[in-house]
Length: 248
Image 1 (spheres, one colour):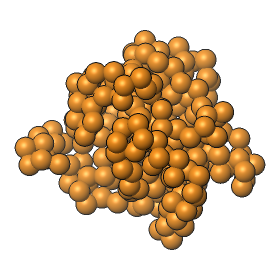
Image 2 (cartoon, rainbow, N blue to C red):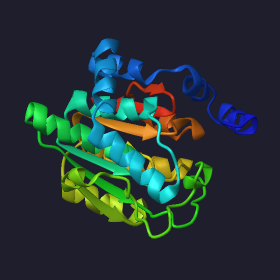
Image 3 (tube, one colour):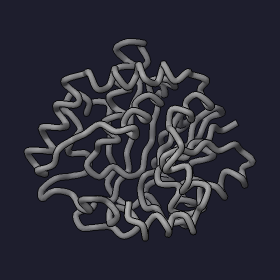
Image 4 (tube, rainbow, N blue to C red):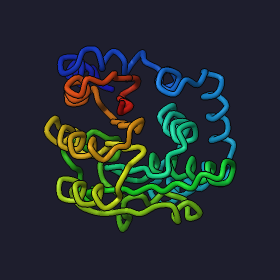
């Protein structure tokens, strides 16, 4: 992260900017779900030692985008969150290449095989055929590889649990969330403007069951997540750019 960008985040949201650097996603899981750090570490190892998953993503990224793949704590966190909460229905906005989506799907896949819990992921994404300001424009590669659609890195064996809707979430989210019914986990990772983030939070909140989770990425970019959670009189958990709230 550049010094200028870090300063921008610090001005926009001082507390969240600090938690981006020093907060640990494992502490969120411990606080919200009550699982010790050792459980998080075990699930991290479970993810990285599955050769079919990591190898498949790595090979696609290298062959199509000329990029290497490296695990990081974001992947571990998203995988562990789904493995521990065992949701039946996950809804996300923002897919891009699909690495985060693949982590969700891998966790749902293992939940089904190991615990008999059948889960599905529904995604909404505005394809970044060109850079999208306040979204993919701040990524190392800001647009999809040529002739690729959102989620192109997702391994084939996981796609049976996945349904993607392409378009603007302002148009699609109200209808799709209504059609899906009760949602166990919602993940925002689309346009990171204050107005858009607040729109998604407000739209999805009534659709979440009691105890369901609202998860948001890049919450340090502005104060939308903080303001929304406070207005709902809920407790927030923030670390490394992720914000999580459990609906009481």
